[in-house]
Image (cartoon, rainbow, N blue to C red; front, side, top):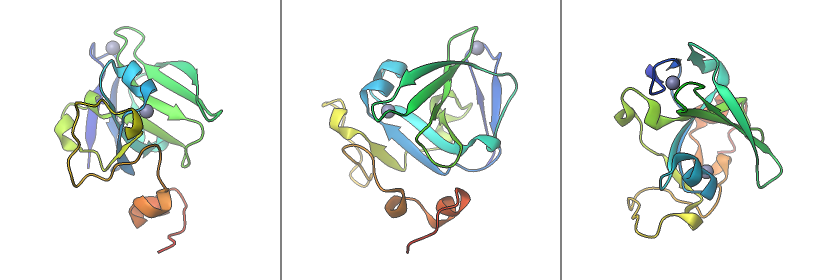
Length: 154
Ligand SMILES: [Zn+2]
Ligand SMILES: [Zn+2]
């Protein structure tokens, strides 16, 4: 998979050189606020597989669990490109799938923080959905667990 994208003014272009570890639709209040929308679609991927043409600016939010959350955006047009959650394993970035040139290329594997999901929004019946977060060991494919150095517990 070779996914490319960028911000609205094209000052920052990026390329993902590996497939996503997993794709989240996050319905938490922070994501709703940051996107101005009902949820965000985040591609969880190791930082080393995100090649960017320029360094985005960042802004730090305090996470609810005490872990910081850095939000990265284009200095010129303000498009928010990705996040970094300091509590997340795997030295990873959460790339906002709406900034892909072809956003249809990915779909959410799992819906999280559905406790604050917009009440008018019905999720697909076959979509795994969680009130808050979930257990990586239970949900991730073995290949993704291996990539971040987790042993498969079967
Ligand atoms: Zn821009
Ligand atoms: Zn969220």
